[in-house]
Length: 148
Length: 148
DNA sequence: TATTAAATGGGAATGATTATCAATGTCAAT
DNA sequence: ATTGACATTGATAATCATTCCCATTTAATA
Image 1 (tube, rainbow over the protein chains, first blue to last red):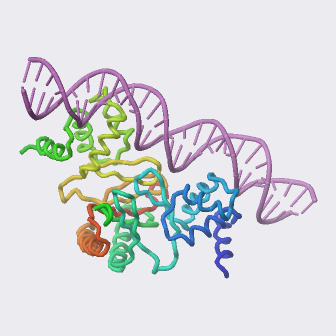
Image 2 (image 1 turned 180 degrees about the vertical axis):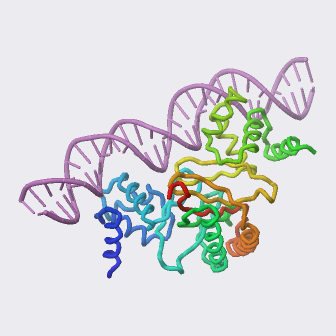
Image 3 (image 1 turned 30 degrees about the horizontal axis):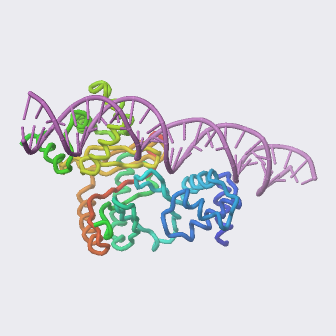
């Protein structure tokens, strides 16, 4: 089963349709490795999809986040960023954020140990607090090379 | 040296004064274990400090965050929360966040292992990416008991 | 094709945060 | 103690991201 078709099934599970604007947004996000704001996505899409509306971008991002296809991340500068959540294990990463300029670096080194511990902690927390744990965020904050 | 006096020194280091409204905000935050929004802090302060302005609350929170006295945290619901950052090791904690109702649980069990790994990862990242690492956030996202 | 609910785009509304500014407070030097 | 130089404050307006609303369009299915 091809990628788009698989996605279509997932949308149906959400009583949602895989429409043209949604496909455009997904297509765009899946190719971008950056953490983009809604406005940036909207602006970038104007080439390939001139008529798209900002509301649709927001609505779609929200839907994708609820579906678990996209991660919404807040670095505290007043706008949310979105990133495609790859299923590939080797693309999993955590973040290193510059508190001065907002630059975000994905790091995926050193993750094996982290993920082992994360999994264990997850199980413990789930049991103790009766939570269903769906995701985790690990980020390090500091000052980047340029801002030093 | 007493607590307030120590704080006063820290403010001087920032070319800032430990004024009455700032002291009120600090006092309030240090007693609250919750993660409060600026508006909530503003509202709560009206008893002890009727004349305080919302701008002052925002400005002070920003200053305290820059000074490292307070942690600003964004759970993605459009407003930032602030929490007093205790120097006490045994009050260090990470977060468990319900993506449905926004409830935040502090957990401090299971931290020893986490912190050991965090420290090691911090050193590695600092070297590799030439970052000065100042802080970290670890949070688990999921569905809480009530929202299940 | 006709029906129906979902989805869209544009504009208005909302709400958190920031900027502006005149008035006030504080410190240091005289 | 007074003055000068700034820092701080509170009120208000401005900004900006996000959400709401609604008339119109689109997609799925009978």
